[in-house]
Image (cartoon, rainbow, N blue to C red):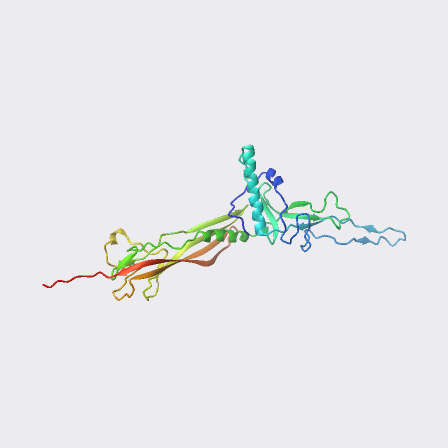
Length: 312
């Protein structure tokens, strides 16, 4: 389910009345063509039921009237997003025309391939339904293609999880190195390894009283020094060099020292940050998503300090 990061909407009934309902259904039909494969909601009598009457000869049979059938309106997550976009556009137009400040109160979403919404005005979750009167013997004032919104039970807040997680993980970027020395170092000088601090990143998506929140945290950063040794793995973003150690030849607690037998004059330091992704739902459920791993490569110069000796 995708809510586009919409937090909480608030929309007067005027906007609801203006909203089009003519999006194509997922099964290929239009709003005036009831679906042919969905299960009617509520169950529909599909045949004329005849009461044989009494056993007294000459008693006429009784025919039960058949009302119009109502079908859930098919919609994908993308369709629901389009409804939300159109709602926002209509509100902007109304605000510009009448110089007011209307707030959206309707949020559309897709659940089980059917169009739903949170109606903040009525304080309830609703499902879109379309009428099919082709078999009805007593349609009343309803005609085929008419629509209605009916109250339904709240969905699981888990439908918001993918939206919150995708927004949080999109904000994770490759690590930015902050080594000391910065971009070149002599052999036998201790290095301090770190990257720019980042996160934690928390994103919360709301739908009426429901919400889902995802938090991404940089758990560790590893440094492959391209010298044949195992990568140095540091907690979080590593350990930046403190001011008091600026002139110390010792390497940091998360550090490395190139030795004199380093073959290459330049190396590519591969820096990899691992982010843990946890989530929580409004019903108290918690969990963890797969880690997110991002990498950057830093060209780095390693050189030897030449000394010149003189005879006594």
